[in-house]
Length: 446
Image: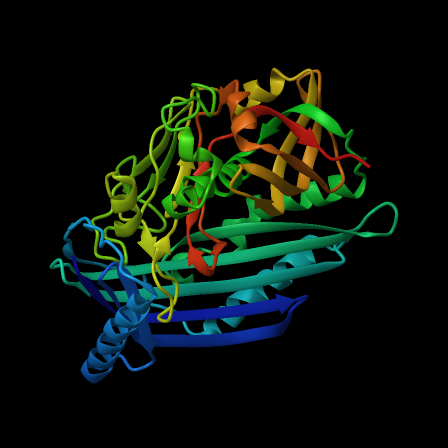
């Protein structure tokens, strides 16, 4: 009933920020090291160090075993029979040759200058570039030998204008994808249509009116639907949180959404293509498989680690992941998505007599009861099936279970984003996606 894993881990990150053509941030970081985790006598021991040599791995392995034995002083514990899944393979994204900092600065300067000329009415323009590269070499006592490489790149463009009352009005647009900054086309020509649309929204928001507080029929744009899936329903379906008392614990086999809603945490492949954050084997060397969290409105299963799968007697999904070399693997989401439906977004809006179309969120929070509150940074009135005035920043809140049970339309398109982080004791690179949803939820007013 013992288990051992060792991991060499290298994390490279860079961030560049330009404000009105002035470079204010230009950073590159490297975090590298080795870790080991041992399961002995029913207890876990973990150790890490910044030495990834053979001697360093030998040292952290011995330390992890000592830590497991030290914890056994708290009393005898019946060891779990951990699942023995094994994976051997190497997976690394093969993109374009990386570009250096100077080239990134040149591209940012070109984009900033283009925005200044094209949108002279803006008060300010911020451009942020970033990319991130994780390489993990994992060996386990079950026989797994894995090289996992996750790479993502992102660009944030933020427009600021002055509203009718003289207060600043701001909208941020996000572009993200696999690979490094070399793999994103961030030229003005490529982004012109998107940025023209963002500028139009900023101008509309300058004349925004307050929302009417209360429960309304809402059309959630794909970005909002993805956030709802991840924050409000995804976390309560992580097995460690389920064991900790999440409301979902006793709801398997029960209805938690309308029959139009199917929600999946995708491991590595979706509709025949590799997803933004592909996980073929997790950081315990367990082969990764999709976790179908909700099928046609019914809660079906949870994401798990070797330990939580053993405790709950459920199939392993390969969902244990660690962010940095000094982090232990935790049950984490990978690529969480509500599957597309059959409705057209324009028809979903046309079917609303009096409601709102929510397009962008800047922040949010949720808990293990599925209660959530998200800040809304861009939204429009819907009157008689047509979009009306923009509304001021507000919030949307409710219980994800109750809200998803009201879903009466799901669009046939899908949006993916891998630009943010998931926070749960440690950061984690994830992607989220979804179609548009039409639901009932509570909107904040003045």
